[in-house]
Length: 435
Image (cartoon, rainbow, N blue to C red; front, side, top):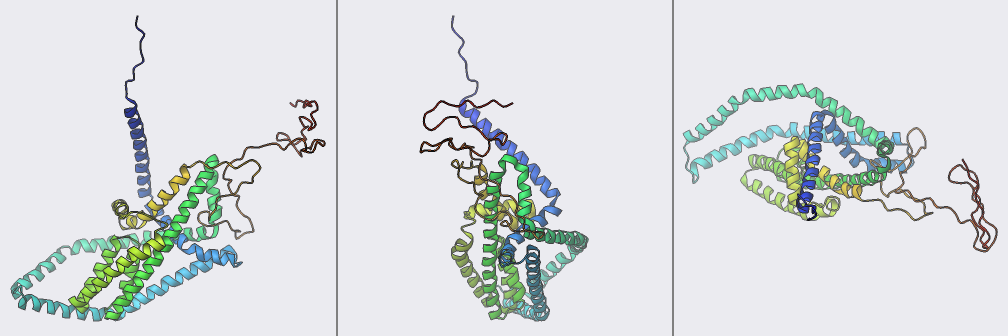
């Protein structure tokens, strides 16, 4: 009689693939519902995300003021006021230049349009005046057809103004409290993870370091880019050079895509105001400066924190743009960089310390800043140890053959523990049993 041999219904490779597929499906479901929740709570999620970016940008100033001996509440207020002054000054500069130079831009565009019209008639195309008039009428008809939709868009934008104002107020409040009490918020957040708090702490610190380097480096690169292009536009005598420089600065926060958008607008304004020769010169300078930025500034300033391949950046931008529009494209790259840096720290097992060696908290600032005294008193939140070291008892006898060393307290009840044996080879002493 033959014995029944156990048969494997599924090959091991297929079982492994099925397990991985099940895990991927579960992760995909979680990510999908998380994205739905973020979409429903975009009124809160977007201001909080922008507040985190602003905190990463403004924290060095706040930290410098604290190290100079200033209380956290005063350092935070000074930081917020400096940021507000920069925004107001930039807005005033843009508004003043736009009000002064916009009429001149309209006149120059009209002159350029007449020159282009004459070139179309007398140039190699030899178009007729009737054809040009027909093309202009078609464009005007299209604009009149879309006027209703444009008006509805403007009205709906006016209705959303209240929500935008509320989001702005929420963003300012979140930024203020992250700058002031970021260490306390992080310590309170870690308490929810229990034994996993060391891993979460390391992952949070790595994520915060990456985000800080990315935001500060991107602002520095965008400032250099906007300053150079603003000088070029002002040197050419292009109207609205200050608003165009600010537009290039803001567009630089969206890698690859933003510079094409801002560069196209600046080129069109240069073409309408100064003609095709100046427009071609501007495009050439823009391309050269963009190459210097990609190969010199970005690797030196942002490359260490990001270190993403251009293909990965394009895919991340596409996904962020599809899910969140312009705002999603702006925050897609830093979010991907933070996740990429935080996952290894969250996955690695913390190393156990040798017996008797004091534990130390991970190096680096705790999100969103290093521990500091709070505004209410010199209270520092507790640091989470990197690992629990095994408890060891001290030796019961000295190495010189003397009497046994009495420890201060036992590990159970705080009373003295009798030594187990003498160092001279005597009989062991039986400890008394305790209930």
